[in-house]
Length: 586
Image 1 (tube, rainbow, N blue to C red):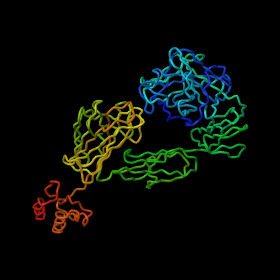
Image 2: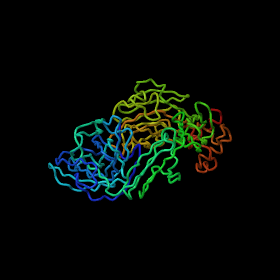
Image 3: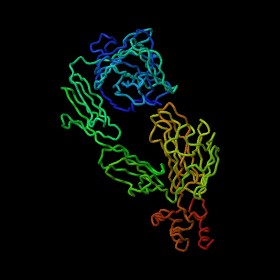
Image 4: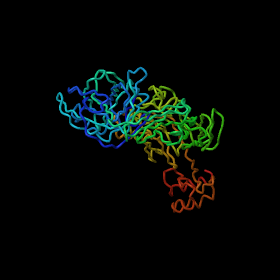
């Protein structure tokens, strides 16, 4: 699914605060007009707006095409539009996203996969100016000066993309234009499809009347990459050259007449004369890292590096895991979590992690598939009883919806309905740590739901913790944790709160890869924590009874709970008989 938010581009993204000039009428009489589809004069509108910041099913994004008979440096874009419901639902335009896309090879539609050639956000509503009422609809003119001229090649089909951002149900729309080819392209988010309906948008492209200079650019070696942005630029305008390496190459610098002039990419400069620049490339290699198991830790250092670069990759173990080594194609290459090397080839590295001896992992791959909770699972001598509230959960394949959430694999815990339900896990031994990977139902969100884990010991509240997924989006993945060294034997996993601003979400979640750590076993009566119950425990037991604070100070590494012989939750006189019985071997 294409997401046309102003956060993802495959080329260059720029946010500029520029001055909005006076809006010129949308007619072909403008000086410097290189292309125009003037307003038809009707009240017909074509929606092109989205609900900022999280999208909605009401969003529609529009592209309209143009072709120029000769090369031109486009410096300005004008357009006309209005509000389908007068702005009552969506409110004013917060900003516009203005972009120019190339066509796919067939020239029939914009290359939305490859992304825009240039894309900008206007610093406000692009100088919205009332243009009159047409067909009972109030229309407005808009104007945007590109931060750098766009070099449009002759006889090449491009696509203008202009979309308004509103803080409400989107309703801004293009006015109907004339003089185009009678068709445009759009993404309808609620239908999750692209469409090619009839119609033309009202917009005008302008080139400066100022004298120009020629900016030439090439790649060296010629097969190492390509350069965008060369062409005719008006005097004192800003040129923007982008060097795009081919696979296996990395950009080094720009030179002019053999002299280095910049290492910036893109290279932006004010045009005051003809210039001939060369983008220089050298061989480059790719580093790819991964963690095994994926929930055992994290890795950093991925990327493309120029030949000879000193590369550093770092492995960081998650709780309950320790780092073992780095391997490449199964062969050990380093036992240091921070591994450095001078790159001379592509590298594919795996950081291996081992589960601590006191920990257990429930990945649900040994669970009965398609079975609804409750179920019991035993791993390493620890039995967990899984149950739920409401419609509950069942064991299903992690890719049951046609995709697998990040970090999930095999079988997982899957919601039985679209209604909220708590996941409840009871253990036959006390735990000190608990974590579980989860994925909430969210579609294209800019924030995520809050999840909560609450621990109990024999029905008594022990601790609680909340978390939100660190990376938002569609079915994001997060890890919910709970720690209580004193121990807990029940955990309730609860969907606590919806995403703050997202419109497309459900109060349900998937879960996988539950990792737990057993609590240290406290031996009743061992008040000096030497591993035995004998006469040496008498004095510390008396101190625990009479002065708990003094006991904690004298025996800082011991747990006073060892004196709770009758397990009533307190150390008091009712524990004396039991302590005496333990001393006597009872």
